[in-house]
Amino acid sequence: MNDSSKASPSVKREVADDVLDPSKALVPVTIKVNEQRVARGFWPKFRKVAAKIPFAQDLLAVWYCARDPKTPATAKGLMLAGLAYFVLPTDAVPDFLVGFGFTDDAAVIAALLALVGKNLKDSHRLAAQG
Image (cartoon, rainbow, N blue to C red; front, side, top):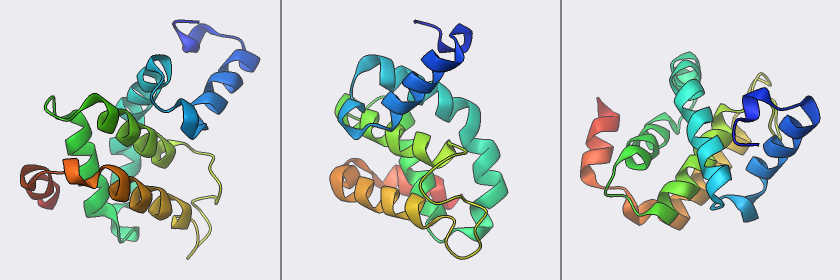
């Protein structure tokens, strides 16, 4: 199961469920899946929705922090889990619901900042400002 792209649909669903399980956010295989998901999907989704979400700058700062080699592994794993949740097409509140679609994503990012926000450096915030 090293390459989930070649797995059966039931195995893929199980891996997806594991990725969404917060208790497994720091399991190496989950971190790898989240990292791949974020690498593939973050920028396309961010470009599409950035103007619609008030937490775009925080989200982008988290992305820069997660990519920083100086960020501790535990914080990076949690950040990747939060970013992967943002990228997933299916989540608790569908993104297409006007006015409500990104409330769950905002809550995840807010919780993430409360947990690991101390790892965000001025350089990450400046990079997020453009």
